[in-house]
Length: 185
Image (cartoon, rainbow, N blue to C red; front, side, top):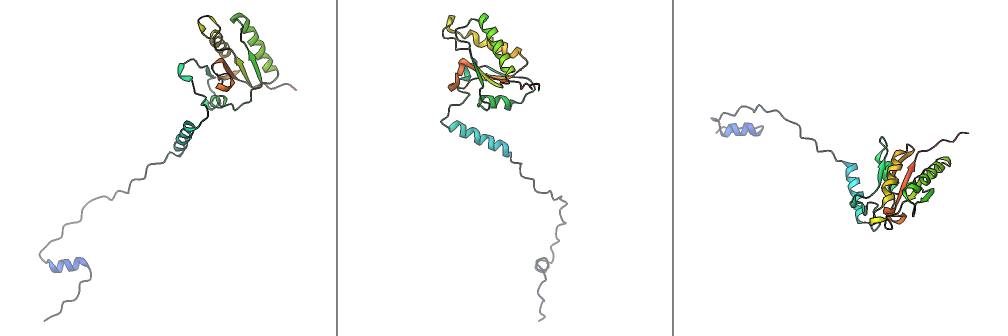
């Protein structure tokens, strides 16, 4: 009896076992590379984590009470929204303050103009204007609040303003960021 030599590979062994079988032709397929994983939005994840931490903190959020639509917010066009965020969070130290309590609209405007001119003359950048919540006015509505907002928006040296934080007057005050004025030497 003749001894068969051992097959060199599996294809040869299969052909030896099944001599009448014809192998299929190779498939005409393109080998596509594996798809790349989706990019990870790292900054978005950090922002979401920060928001979650802020929502779980015991500190009062500056947004508290803003759902009423009565808050004063203004940002000069062309400025970054981070400016307003910094102003709301108290990034700048309040250098001067004006209290308009008890004044009529006619009395309040010249006092406000004089105050802003004085702030610019002395280089103050961040000021607080207390206009009151309107609890003592007719119909208990804040008359000066909207007037002050309108007057501030008309002045070019006002970069931004927002409602003061609760501890600084809340809905009865506004924090204003003024342009930096270069003094002549």
